[in-house]
Image 1 (cartoon, rainbow, N blue to C red):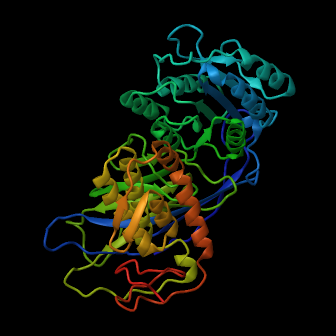
Image 2 (cartoon, rainbow, N blue to C red):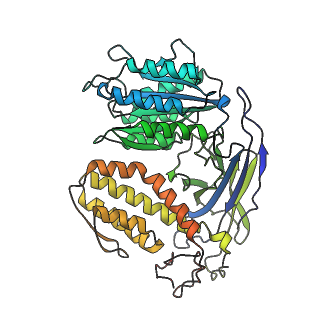
Image 3 (cartoon, rainbow, N blue to C red):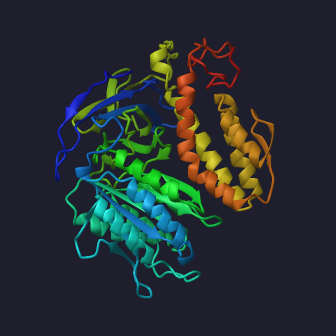
Length: 495
């Protein structure tokens, strides 16, 4: 069942200046509203899948946020031998900033073992407007910025850079806070410290990450960008274009912190919440404010107002519920908008109700089971690539085989092409894959870093191409979305 979409103006946010006004719409769709308890296991919980669609449009039309609301930190976590390229990249990055943006440059401290510190502008609590005067001064000053000595280990990790950004943003009254972390992996990280710092940052700022150089561990950057609602990009040795693009990307996101909240009733839990566009991310909620309320921090809303699509995976226990009545299991909230997630428990002894074919408009994004299958495909692809990078043949072939089987069923040819880069697919439908080892670990890292953006973009293109309607599966009569190649229930190829 699909609830009507709403669109209402949202009041401007607080802080200096006037935020660009924006509008929001929220749609929740449960396309399999009949839940069937398992009579073999009394009290066993059942999965309930719901699609959530959010559209946020701002007056800037995706060009720029109100620069009077925006503050940027460029953090330079780089080794000394990259100084020349860093200076060139900073010139381009400064030129990409709108003039009313406030900014600061953070580098490693000058003393041995010092953590990150504000290098420009000098003076506690100060920020520089991105006018011509400060652009020239900052471009000149970074030529002498303290960088890590080549080959010298640091006494702080990525958590140190995030902590310094958090401290600086706390002294700023602008609502749109963006960190651009440029790193060549010199810092390293400790898992526990990074996890704790990411939780501490919450939704205070967003982070774009630029990975400079090759043959080092990119995995923490994907975690940082995913948790702090940004993009991680592998830039190679010359990172000027990537940094300037990250600045422009950060300045386009005009919507302030606007979290999605999910409130579940007793007996219901959130198993997962996955965003499919504009980035494919499995989202982590902030620590719950109560046993039934989950807040997902401000997400990377598409600046041009394109719809963001999510899959909400709930686990429901209906031991005390009546059969055959429409019940509310959860509420999805976005600002002042609220939409219910409803379904019915069906008596498992009764035959299933006849499935009603959905219209083309309702199936453009695919059913919740299609989205769930697609997410599992990406999860197995990611795990398979990680196993390849670690040289674990059995794990790589098992996960890539499962990804290939789902890709074959859903007609996701790009996944099969990706798997073909690393090995041979002897039977996609059966998930039979053999891999070649050793794999290029750097190439694996780059693929993993870009996987979320690539898979989300692929979804958008496939959605746009779905025009030819397809009838129900001739074998199991399951309705199919327009343009589908294989049945999502039995896997049979569709005509």
